[in-house]
Length: 426
Image (cartoon, rainbow, N blue to C red; front, side, top):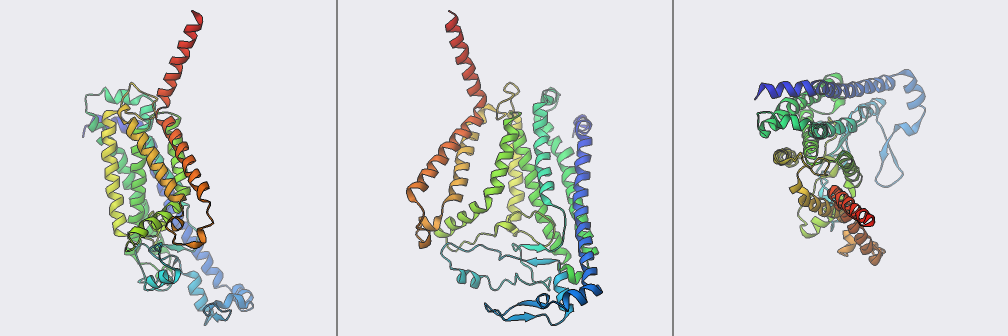
């Protein structure tokens, strides 16, 4: 690659890149040390004289392991050591790997999933990709690092556009493809490399810091969980890069990104559940993955399915390919438009309008009511429901059109206003 491009990028972004890398190391490694310290404190408490004499031996409720079936007959721990072992086990499974189909009863669903020992807490070999394993001790909040990766990718192209630095870059005797590849090679690749090291560091901190019987996970399982999380973070980075190159308005661009992210996070779960009902009505043999294991938000024992892992990396490459094409056509004459390439206005509007309506429409539709699967949902007001969908469509259409064609609407309004003033002055 051109050493001049490398020098320019490192001079402009070098300090910011180092700061983001240090933040990644800080949050991943402090989260791992926090898990270790929390586990160690709990271990010392459970082996203390005060716990044994005052809390365990004198309180029968602490000695109850469970109940026989649906009855109130308690099952007691065989000893205090059994209680300690269960309490100190880090990773516990919480969900079956697949959602029920729309036609399945609860009994049929559990019967189909009974061979998954996803409730086990003692044997690390009781492992299944696509099963959510939660940990019982504190760690770092993954939301910050995920948001950091998305915003880093967004800023990588959006900032240059809004600070007119693109004018300088495009005046250099190099192609736009070289400029685009240089950003990925000199800025994006070191960021992903640092992310990989941060993830590996957190894995080894936990693996060597907590005794294996209590950690309840093998090193290959933790590495696969780390790879699943890395795939999620890579998709977030490339998504940020894509939107950073596509969006051009200083206010509406970031607002649309944050608003879309807010609605996606808040509405994804109901959308996915209703989408599962819609798909399994027509294809009953398809079993969709549990939504909580599609996106692996933290490094531990949870790993997504191999199919999802491959799709995440492939979709990241597709986003980079689309971004490169957008970057080639970025127009400096239309600075301030919602999209950087005027020829992308119509495709962006259609994608935003149709995609948003499908997302909200599928997620808000009780398909078991539509297909008359669940008689208990007949209380839904049919006329009111279709009216709500119509209002939703109109609102989404107006917002999508207003965002994409904001500059055109503004120019049209100013032109009309100037024409009126001119007519009045005659």
